[in-house]
Length: 192
Ligand SMILES: [Mn+2]
Image 1 (cartoon, protein in one colour):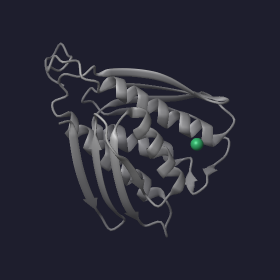
Image 2: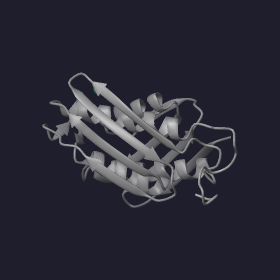
Image 3: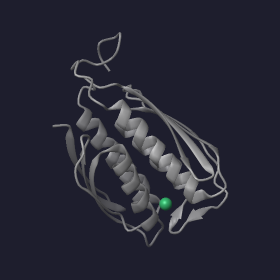
């Protein structure tokens, strides 16, 4: 079973998250409506089972809630992937959303890295600061121990640009974590 359940409690956030790489129920509650929308899209398009319950310090702002959810989701990916054996390892995907186009490329490498190149014409999507997308994706990549490249090629609407980025990341991850039935890490080193 490629699953993980991770709990993390700090003075800023209290998070419970359950991930199944091979699908299952999707149930998201973070207290930030647009972020729930993004995580729902991420899980649905990635084909992941994902249940998330977050109680964060939203009286401050949404920063800790979103970044810490990225940390916990990344830890869940890392745990669910185990020794990273028997998967395709690489995945890349373009997602258009109306006028916006986003690209994502993933290597389940064991070497955490994020390259993020996107501009957002509007600063916010509802209660979500668009500056949080890079924070979430960095937390996800570093804690999952993956290399993640994300690029917005163009777009006029921050909701479309952000959603295309989350969906592109989801599809790239879906391809990368797909089972290849070898049971072994895809590496000349033999270990990832
Ligand atoms: Mn939308």
